[in-house]
Image (cartoon, rainbow, N blue to C red; front, side, top):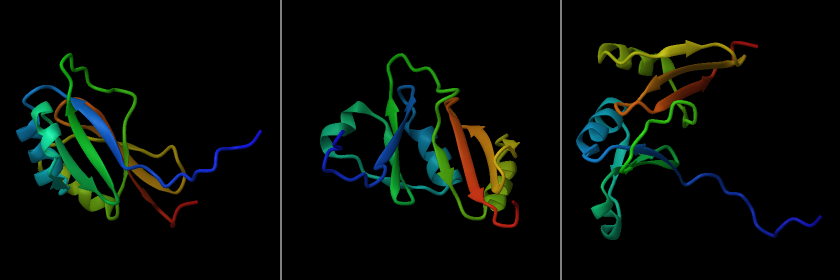
Length: 129
């Protein structure tokens, strides 16, 4: 079997759904609390609602879904540096999270965004085998 002559470059963005009117809360959580930079949406997409953020080399799109239901299993996994500092920031702002040690060499935890979507944050820990 011959594969197509193209190359995978990575992900451009991940989209999470949210209810109508979510923009202010998304900006507070992803922008102010997590420190992601907002990216202006193209003019033609602005009427749809939602908000976009830069997350390293990728983007996170928060999109409005009419019959919104949060994602409880499917989720983005964010790579971070200084995960302990992120956990401390979340604690300071009353955001609960659950540590997970099931992957050797990885420090990771799960939390939810303000809309109930599952989020994972992870950092390689070279001191652990």
